[in-house]
Image (tube, rainbow, N blue to C red; front, side, top):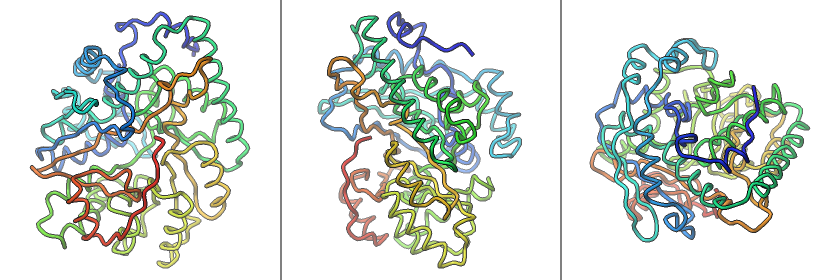
Length: 434
């Protein structure tokens, strides 16, 4: 495959040449996996997803032109699943399983378009809401984050000369390759790209995935991005996310039912999928609370994803939980994915290697780490903590507690109520980089 000269493409940029969203498959595979279960069981639940800039010191409207933002959002709404993409989804093997997506679901997805949005500026930030049926709205999460992230990057390098761009991307490539060399020194490493949502750009994301594929070979297990997986012939990696228990929690009739919601979500997931898709994401309402009340059958699942707790602390807690239930951790999978960079990956690998099956999902600091790469200081190239979360469902606000209250979302009073219901005690607060 011919390598793209990113600096030249950026310098000669035009909207028609480089729209940010080029395909409905330019998303994370876990969104499609969740969408299939939502489409089958809960399609008509009314929800709202909202853009949240957790880096509140960065005013996005100061760097991103609202007209251009609307152009990109409107363009994304014109994108449809192509015949080639539908055939690939139908025939590809995911996690060793054929026909993971049903013909009925793919027929519906073939007619799908992203629905309307509501965009305004409030308090120096963009407020973007996506409201409608759950099955219709959920796929907006990844495209809107990719659009905001890339428009911010484009603004940061707007006006930079051709040779300075060459230097910028040369430094970024060297920086990433140095990380790849360090990762290659870890003999049993298994690592995937999780960097779609907050990437520097589509083209840079593609370069990073290709570099990982070439540099790490069998240690690189794949990408969460469905389009890159299809076009580069690599595995699509991902399972489920926080939105499933967040939405289901709004349907709970009382506090007792609320405490059981996340286990009902896992039962539903288990009916749909098996094998390495049975990965528990335990931190929606706090990992410790999840483990304390989890039914015994959860221990038979393939593994856990440690998302918002310190990797060592979270991993040790889950290993102890497995051992207390006579499960051999060496047969289980631990996936680490929260704000990882090379030092954190090496730390977790060296701590747990040989004790569990290890996996890493490398996100923002793989696909958007151009810090210090510009010849001149350019804070616009620093990644920020940007999310798009379900904020309402069934006419009620949603809540995510997380293991780090800096990542919590929902009305403050309702957050306190959820903390009481789940018995989380005093959750810690850790500063967020991404």
